[in-house]
Image (tube, rainbow, N blue to C red; front, side, top):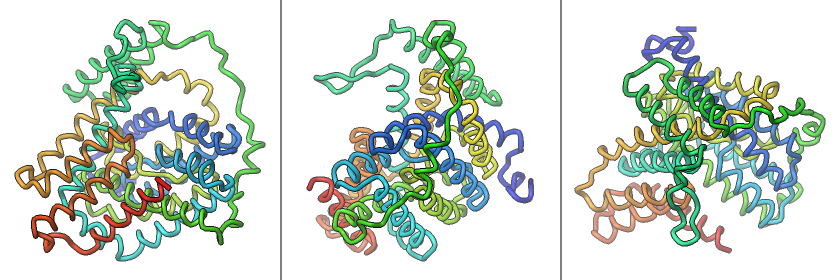
Length: 427
């Protein structure tokens, strides 16, 4: 096992990897219910969506663990699933079966890029300032998600967000767990995130945030899933809406995952594993269409596992195995409240923001596009839309200051594609 996963080379141990895998699982397990509910709006039965989400995640984590040897967790992406349901199905009018066909073709195009020199061309064309900004922007996005999940901020009709009710027991649980999480992390306590999750869950029970008397429910039935697995359809392949959907989805999964994978391999200081990880990511995206869900992405919650000590593919495989087991224990997993998970997301966001020091803030043509990415990822609640603003602004600023020789030609094409994608979203 040490030789296969290069544990010594990665300065890690089996125990450390297993703990990181458990932390990753508890941090992102919410996706099972959330993704299934969004797929249900597209017409996919809820229980089938749950099974599809779990099996796709298991396959993605195995691919990432065995091929990429990184602790990156692949799950159906938030934002991407909304694109699948509310744009491709509800706006463009495709059936969910045809939408799965779109997922499959988009995954194939992603794989073509990942397995060709286009990966190096695209990666080398993206300036370091934009790459670092993506990591920082995702960190702020993760923090914002954590603040929402923990109730520390809430919706406001006048200012969009406001401070939550600190007298609410759920918010109290979040704040107490955040204090414990920070203290354990600062003291470098082994398994600190897992301990904080257990503490937060116990505190939630103690303060009545979780109803212990609630019915745990019955085991899930797999009957509906047999009508979803392999149900992808290509009947609309000659229609314009189908290819608009393919273009939009491919844009999202390619550029979002390039940014995410790059950020994660940099976190473990193994940039040489970038290409193999991106290839595993693309294969997982293809399988998503077969399993019956929106495409997988290198989830931002991967940062939790990395910060817990995950350095190799053993972390991803551990998480995948726990997802498979979750089908047996899903009625009980729901008792782990968001308030126990939110503090980890907040802390990880704080760790990721340190990448801002790698951006040349003294050069406006570098710093301002980076700022747009950092600001717009959380403010638009979309990684790909936030990236788009920075990627379009970068070459424009260089041209305005007659420094276009600093921009590699693929970046102009990428900027143009982002503009076209914006157009498709508004028509």
